[in-house]
Image (cartoon, rainbow, N blue to C red; front, side):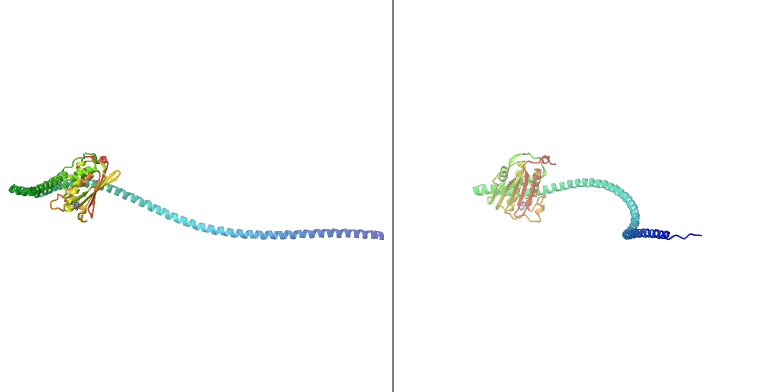
Length: 361
Ligand code: ADP
């Protein structure tokens, strides 16, 4: 049989129970507080996690964009790669085609080169033949010129010779003629003889070209002796340059050039008018000009007047200007003409270049 607790035991039990309950409540409170704090912490963690999740989802989104972009790029690169492969293939084909063409061209070039060689040989052969034929033609032309010259000289000499013969006949018939008339006839003799001498000189100068005999010469002296050698009619006024220049030349040949130009001018002005001779010092060369008051030279004959045998005169040899040209060129100079008025310009080096001292053929 169970013994019933006493009242004091009951009271102590209640007190213990109360104390226990009080402690339990306190512990409960503490736990509650602790739980609340933990809940707060959890909430905080949850909200932080949410933030992180949001952030991660944004990053994920960005990454998805980038992956999309990379995928696009990869696709377009694949496309490009396909295109490159295709064009590479085309290039290979073209390369093959070009190589084939190059080979064909090389073959053709080889054929052209051998043809060229063949042609060059044929050309040399033809050039030789042309040379030989030219020499033959020159020879034939020379004979023609000599024949023409002889015929012309014979014809030209006949005229002054008949003047001399007629004058002599008159003088023979009239042995006592007046002195003035006699002088007139002598002047006719002189003119006829001078014309013949000039024509013979022209032919000789043309036919035999001799070497230059060079010496330092005063240009005025050469001009003076050229004028002195020509019969200058009284109505012809020749003006000479004031200054003199010294040059290295063949004075005899140069005198023939000046005489020819002066005689041509006298004939052009028909024994009446002016002839102006100018000289300019050009340091290493000189320039001479012969100008006359004649009718000038028409454009159609201007390019021909230096040709041998070209003449517009009834008794001309057509050799004067051709001889002038040859002498001036032998001196390393040039002669040219312009019109109107007729002006002949000669350029001569003061010191003749070495190559022009080579004897003429
Ligand atoms: P030629 O005097 O014997 O005719 P040239 O060779 O000296 O031979 O002259 C050739 C031609 O040039 C002359 O016939 C003439 O027509 C022309 N000519 C030369 N000098 C003059 C000049 N000063 N004025 C006009 N014509 C000229």
